[in-house]
Length: 331
Ligand SMILES: [Zn+2]
Ligand SMILES: [Zn+2]
Image (tube, helix red, strand yellow):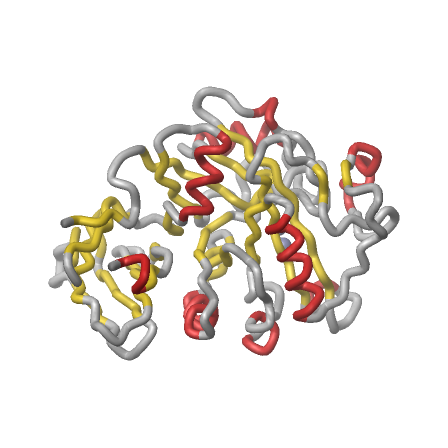
């Protein structure tokens, strides 16, 4: 019997899960960000301005869903010049549309750029003390845990741009997902494999981290997340995030994905390669013949593989990445 790993029913919605506006350090207004992304065929944008969580529900319509979120940064060693500083950035996306209280809030620090103008609008847990950020695995994991416990989908962002390596990210716990892609620039397959092989059960997403430089669409459309759900409704979409009903991509499409017996089947858009990457050395790669393309592949799951994930590569070198599927979810 077929077991669908991306739901059989419903529709794929194109989502940017990491976006900035001129309410922090981006160039475009929230309305223009919506216009640009709708124009590119997106249905969902998570607004994740630096350190400010504001209600964006007025932007949602029948064909567009604005998710409420914010991004926090925890800065480490390096020169004060941002370009040389180790840092960790995490996005929190509210699972409920009315969850507008920020966790890890500090009453007088961390806000910068235009975000400072909105300080008075921030809601937070008033009986909690100011949260001091430290660039340690312990503190960052605590922030991720608080985000998760207070009803947010927590993502670990752009490890490459942040100058982070294994010794940093392997100590970060409680994230739901990491950025496999950040815009058109960053692709982090090795980081994802490191995380999975260290026992973390996390998903992978793609997001632009757009700042709309230059206006109107600079930095938009580099990578995204395709979410499969029954309808474009706030809670339906955030539940699909929690359930892992999505894949990340720079262009290629995973159209269907199921397991039948011990065989994993994938149906794709036109691609040159389909790679199955398991926990161990049982990887398998299917390549199209010269001048042709592939649209499907079947992989026999080995009994000693803990999980497997799939990568597609198209003729332009763009890739797509599935989440990792673990043995106990597959069988
Ligand atoms: Zn960031
Ligand atoms: Zn960002």
